[in-house]
Image (cartoon, rainbow, N blue to C red; front, side, top):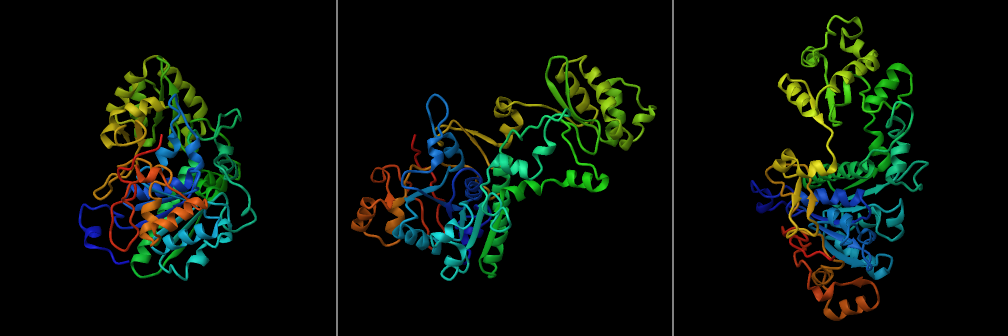
Length: 431
């Protein structure tokens, strides 16, 4: 598709006019398409006629579908049974009008529906098709089920995360899901560049296990250099010291990262006479003797509150920062200035939305609510050429579902060749 003047006009959304078919569930796939949506793409979610399973995961006293609302904001919704021939035909027709298709079923599932990349490629030569799975589309683990915790364990992350006494701990955030969504978005964007340059479509294969294992840079370097299996270090760094968390007199925790150029400043602030101690003479020596060094520094930090130390350390140019809670980050002035958390219950189904962390001209970021189940079914089928009777028949047959005669439909999803407003902008959410 040739880019339009609106698409390339300075200040317009980066992905304006790009049409994305979102055939995903859970977190990794939806997070990928949310990134694309926040960058301006027109995203249409394909979900079962009973609704995405994440809609059932409700939180808080109001029992709102929080996970779904956070990862499907600003999208349209077509509720269709893809396992039925008529439903598969609808998705196939939509693929022909789309630039990108993202799916995260188990390996081979889309192909069994006749909706795999090779099935669609003859009619969609420029389609960027992205498959997200636990272990990828080939290899001995291809058919194994993959979830966040399994990916953290299989990738080696779990073996190096935890306390120094050997107690393991998973990452507090679902890093394999979110990280895989990011890798998938990067792959899609790169493939779109090639497709727009006339190089044709592409098949992107992204796996949860690969995504986390690819972050093992420090640990792989350590193992290759020493031959010793890296072990959990608590908050300490694998190659530098002092570089970890310390508790202050008020119980608050401070993270310190004092590389070589900040060492003398750290000693001055802490009033520690360590410059002539041979154990700490060089960055490498400090790393080798990081345990006794941490004990000395911890004893000093325990003599004053965290804010006192942070102020003094920052003034001296020593990297440091607080260990914030989730409640802390939601009210933090820095994040507020960056617009990372959007507190606006009028525009969104939830009082707080976590924004895509890309701040740039052309990146609109989060703007609208998640759609109701089937909010755009009628509009999409009408655009595909289905008349009212045929749509009614498909509803009766259980092939598609619509939402309250379109009362809350967005009316904004357009998958034709022209540039269009992004799907779901201003859509009402179903509580």
